[in-house]
Length: 226
Image 1: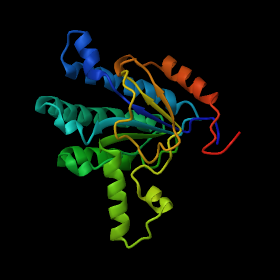
Image 2: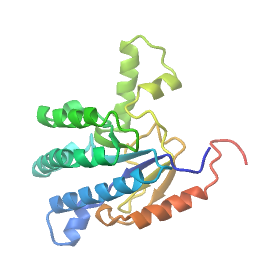
Image 3: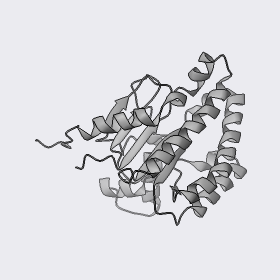
């Protein structure tokens, strides 16, 4: 019941709209959004109160986007991981992907797994990118995993079988919409939700600090009473 946000999750919305405001292609917004990922991750890694940062990078529904945009996103992910590995290691960040990676190319899967393995020894911030991720899909896969192993299905066993085992304390969505879009449905049962009109490429450390300050003032009762 601590008012410190141990697990912060962010729905990074608004890359395409930000680019269009600049008169640019949507892909330009995704590149700028990747820079914001770097700055927010670096900030969280330097603040001991944040133990895990989970970012919604590519959903199971994002495959509906134009083919050229999807191809660009796949290349951007490949470049991001190859470029960021040294940063992860320097800042003692452990990378842990969530989602169904089997939907990606074998090359991208190998890159993701290699970064995961290379940072497995890191003891600082856990950065999770939700990749080909959907909250409902995660719960279904969790139950299937338990059925396959003949395990008892309970709230505790489902929680342990999920891609992301830690409950979310603070969930932020940028971009102006007020919904969670199939993101960490199970883990966000008692998360505090914050929505901002700021588009993701314009989201700053200063705004994150202000949201965390507001979070710390919230009385979290978890179904109980004061």
